[in-house]
Length: 153
Image: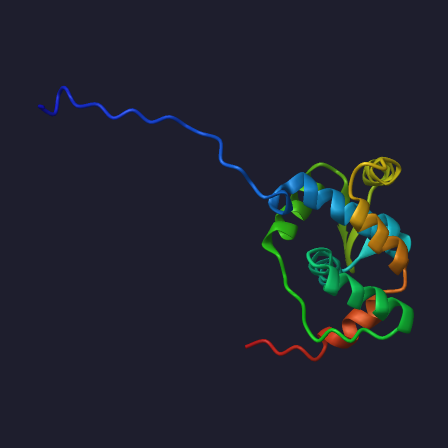
């Protein structure tokens, strides 16, 4: 065949994205953390990543629940997920959260969405159960006490 007669045909096909990497999924998760487990609807980024890390495996969430009960965080380090950072940027752009000097804070619009998610019994059941068990007992002070020992390489 000559070059003039050769044609390549490409078809765009949908690519599945894990739920954990979908921005709306992450947005709802962090709204729940701010609404159900944060004082005044505020949290530092480091603390938000702790909850995000805990949501990923039941043994991790059990450690955080135990830390809330004992008032001592015995986790030496946790992961920082780029998907959470992206979701936070979308949340800011949508007016659901705003940045404050200590991290992030719910807006009225964010409170309304978080309350709608809390009321819906069919979604985020495991996250809501974890956050109910923790309450507001994972404090910024507990998180800072662990993070102060981290060394930047």
